[in-house]
Length: 123
Image 1 (cartoon, rainbow, N blue to C red):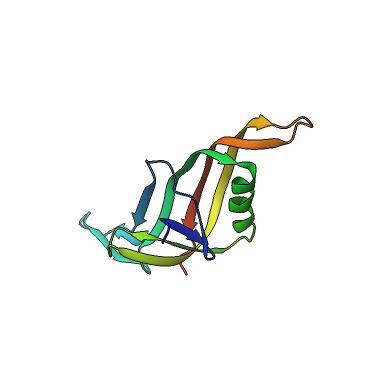
Image 2 (image 1 turned 30 degrees about the vertical axis):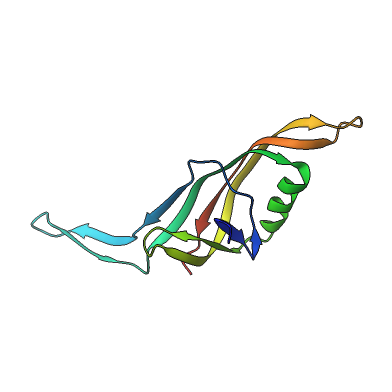
């Protein structure tokens, strides 16, 4: 199993530095004594930040972008909390890459510094 899969499509191994972020959402305020009063809202949510590939073929990058073309996607990744695979409904943030090599007609054949981040929908 790959480190990360989007709707079942296994992504190539990313560069070191991927940061799975676990966020606990809290509805909080302060009472008359100034003490924090709050409660957890829903479940912990995840963001997968720093997802980067230093070098991909145009076909690989296109497959990743195509897998992300639906607004919501199901992402399977290694959950650091449960130390197991987890699938969560997410959406992607900005996607960027630098065309590196092109063919004679100017069409990119390879990209470098391909980046994307994935954000939990909370569902």
